[in-house]
Amino acid sequence: NAGVTQTPKFQVLKTGQSMTLQCAQDMNHEYMSWYRQDPGMGLRLIHYSVGAGITDQGEVPNGYNVSRSTTEDFPLRLLSAAPSQTSVYFCASSRSTDTQYFGPGTRLTVL
Amino acid sequence: SQQGEEDPQALSIQEGENATMNCSYKTSINNLQWYRQNSGRGLVHLILIRSNEREKHSGRLRVTLDTSKKSSSLLITASRAADTASYFCATEDDSSYKLIFGSGTRLLVRP
Image (cartoon, rainbow over all chains, first blue to last red; front, side, top):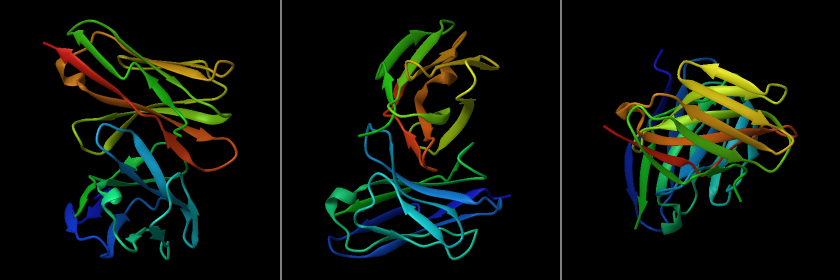
């Protein structure tokens, strides 16, 4: 099993650009979530999904969209990038809200 | 604001000593989890304790949970230099599927 994979590993955007961060898991997990981690800080929940077709907002959802058309994939879309969205983004999956398996992260810089 | 707050924010100890980290949270929970993060990498699950449990052990880890005080502690015994990392608590709110992380404790174990 590859576990949780995220692409790209690094990305630099200009203010106003849009992009999609990809997340995939091959463990048939129902629960997937996106977090952002700012320097020296903990993780903040952006959006999460409890199954295909079901998504909900976390702590900091503004500026981000998600969809869950399949069990395996949970992409995160930045609609119009802002410098405040410079962060490391982590995707995680689990069978429920028990043990979360994290991807390696995407380091995003918005200029 | 984040659900869990860890204390202390940073801890420096000598190899062989015990390390204790505390986590306080605000709402009723289903479970509380501890994770470890090495230097900007993804988080790794360490241990989960459910709301009806008071203490749990896993190897050199001991976790306690006091739901009346809304607090938990993580004890790492006989620490090693390889334990140097950031440690985060995360709580599953009992009214949603959200898993919310605290701000973390940075542990340095000096050889």
